[in-house]
Length: 165
Image 1 (spheres, rainbow, N blue to C red):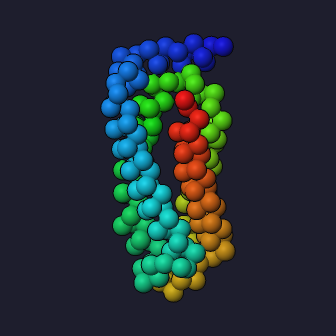
Image 2 (cartoon, rainbow, N blue to C red):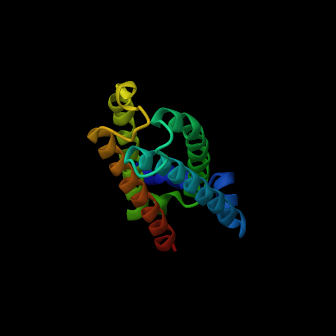
């Protein structure tokens, strides 16, 4: 398979080999990855719980998003970089791992859900974001989907760690 050949080349690059062969480098990268994921999921959950009307009701959704989304994106960049570094260390095996592939699908679903919410749900936010907690059903649905998908991302991420031996 052509893709396996390209992935084989990737895992023989200097940085990938260094990560794979060093006893402490991979665990440190993984630790930073986990911390970044915690920040991503945590900040997204804050917004989702506000949309569901169960937390941070004293803030408007716009204010809350303005305050936490920059941290979400920063942490996501760190998670993507560290995840890519870990992937490179054993790319062929990761590419055939059920949990890894599932995590990628779930991340795409989370991105699609976010895009739909920001393109459609935020469009009329001025009308409903009055700080009363009366969020439209569509926004609540997006928040629910987001929470479920991000919990699944974390679960699949753990599954990767337990099946890559």
